[in-house]
Figure (spheres, rainbow over the protein chains, first blue to last red):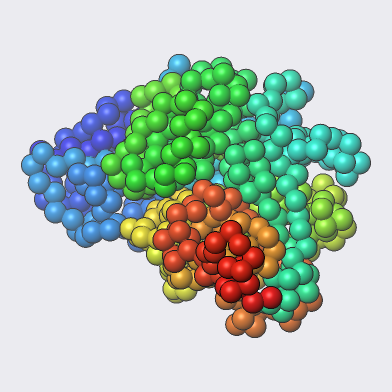
Amino acid sequence: MPQFRIPGPLRRLSDGQTTVDVEATDLANAIDALDARYPGFRDRLLDEKGELRQFVNVYLNDEDVRLGAGLRAKVHEKDEISIVPAVAGGRRRA
Amino acid sequence: MSKLLGMRCRECGAEYELAATHVCEMCFGPLDVVYDQAALKKVVSRDRIEKGPKSMWRYRDLLPVEDSAPLVTLGEGMTPLVKADRLGAELGLRNLYLKNDSMNPTNSFKDRVVSVAISWARSNGFETIACASTGNLANAVAAYAARAGLECFVFIPVDLEPAKVVSIGVFDPNVVAVRGNYDEVNRLCSQLVESTPWAFCNINIRPFYAEGSKTLTFETAEQLGWKLPDEIIIPIASGCQFVRHRQAARELVEYGLVREDRVPKFTGAQALGCAPVYNAFKSDTPERVLPVKPNTIARSIAIGNPSDGMYVNRIALETGGVVEAVTEEEIVDGIRLLARTEGIFTETAGGVTIGVLAKLARAGRWNGDEVVVAYITGHGLKTADVLASANGHSRRVEIEPTLKSFREVVKI
């Protein structure tokens, strides 16, 4: 199954999980599936028009989806979907 | 009592405690440091600044380093603001100034941000300093980490200019050359930051780091006799420093340091080979900055996915500035024009700034009396290879060591 990599600032939503597997055929329904399992992700990732928020970068197997098909990008078995804050994220580990 | 109150999300206003973090957990917006303005208003004055050290640290009250923290400094800042009469004459500008920030300790404006970042990081217990860099930042980080005696990791694109590789390596940091462009290096570091106890200057400690840029505009106003100019031309990479210059102008007004409350027009300069901010500026949706794959000799500002791009366009529009871009040829012409008229050798990013200045001047943007300042942010020796490959120097001759040979070849 395609797998999301969840960045530090959003792990509160995913019960601390760093990766989440979803069943999906494109990025849009992958985000729907992620949100169905852990509600709140859609609002964090997409704006009111349903487009990726300005400060969110999504990489499909290391490719910035904005440089490709965007939310219509097809996702396949074993694909890795990384969510990365635009300038990046995370806290210093204690 | 601390002059720093905490951090606040620039987008949604959510508040956070001071920490090595830069992303809002609510909306992913960038975090900014919040100062106790009421307390600072009682302290900050022209007199206090003028009696301070002859470095950017004369503005320490307005920087996010507590008074008790020992500074990591190499004397950065208070670089020359020179009146550019000869360049101005070519461009029809009678009050053109250059803020020559290539005169910093490692020859770029990055010394300002890094001095703040490493001073903050060391006093907050970090033992390793890191960064993702197009070269100038890595250069500054390596030097200041050496000065502070801290462990250092710099991440650079594998094909960085040779001069930059040498001037980073001499400080003996751990250099990680990544097979990718800057955006890929930055993304890798963005993921690494979550699994290392390191202070990445341009990532997790960005809210502190970024504040150092303000001093460029503080000094410019001070050197103009506590006046802000009519317009400032600034090269755009991530857009981070552009945003801080707007903030600096706001603070100069709020703290009563400048005589008038008029804010300059802020104008941005990009290379057409990497112009995501310019592209958006020219479009119907200037705040929607779409990433590009960079392809330009102006490598130090070649960021295809600029984090503060939307803010650059917002500020340019709000203040009456523009964002303009120039070709590769215009970049080299800009380097040569500045050198030939003013005796200042700048890197390709400076060529972009001067190229844009010249392009706007020739298009009739100014009537000639405006006070215009261009920020020259890095030294030409960092990217000397672009001139070597661009057909060298056309006025060179080669002769025998005799008067006869000289007279034959050189007509005087």
